[in-house]
Image 1 (cartoon, rainbow, N blue to C red):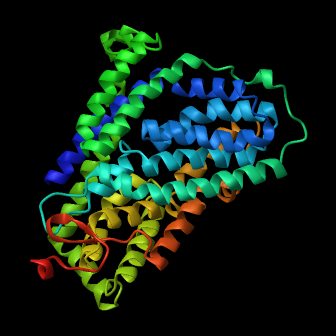
Image 2 (cartoon, rainbow, N blue to C red; image 1 turned 90 degrees about the vertical axis):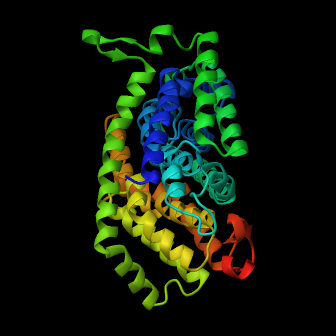
Length: 411
């Protein structure tokens, strides 16, 4: 197994701990309390929900995990306040995908970085640096989504609003768990070391959780039912094992494709038709290929980028695009339209099913239309490719340069 594969598996193992810790300490409950304290009504509950879910998802780094934890909390509360079900579902899903797009502990962020190798030095794109360079696209798309949700929330509300007292009052003490999250994100961006960042996050999270009484000693590690391991450490690792197993299978497939010459044939075919003859053409190929591959993988973005990443790496490097740029174009395609492909999207189907369980079922196609963040992210990256916004090339020693410059020309 390659070094990149081993590194990815190790990263998935450690990030599972912080994700489960935040789930156990119920961070989302603190945001519900905050919304209630601010007196947010039906019209503005939708954009506020989007912002809160963005924060939760960015903190936990898991879109599917946030999807399952946020819907039971925010959807009934919003319905009780009179928010429109379709807009509310779209806001929750959008927030989940924002976190997956920008979080340094997100599996999709890690995969998009670890599959893009340098050509002028050893190693792959650093996760912290990728997050820093991706922020301008993610936050631009998020700002557009907030405005869209605010306008739609004011324009469309349910006429039969329930009592706000029906909503969960929340627990303000869980907001203390933002402290380890801020520390984790700071270390990840400053030191560009995801292992160090998660270690800081987990240790500080346990300390803060115990001090604020949001975490009990037996929730760290203990003997569960029938003397089985329990606690956030055991549960976090157990929850990540299926994804790790899938990653191993995908890496094995990638190795087989590489050994068989399939990737060389694909790259050669793309180059023959001119898709990597210029930086913009290479980016359109990476962007479109990422969307298509993610759709074929039922919009599960992490494994799809594991499969497509080596192709994006080869196509992008042929145009001397910097690994950060390759990673960002690929990830924004996968987390944009790729994650909400109609009919096949796992995210849309799960969201629709969860809303149906509340009695206010929303169809998958309707949620697609109200998923403003992934739609705006797609448009944002299209503009970035057309205008060259944020485009960088790989210079000597892996440095980012704005002008097209091949490593051998700078030697």
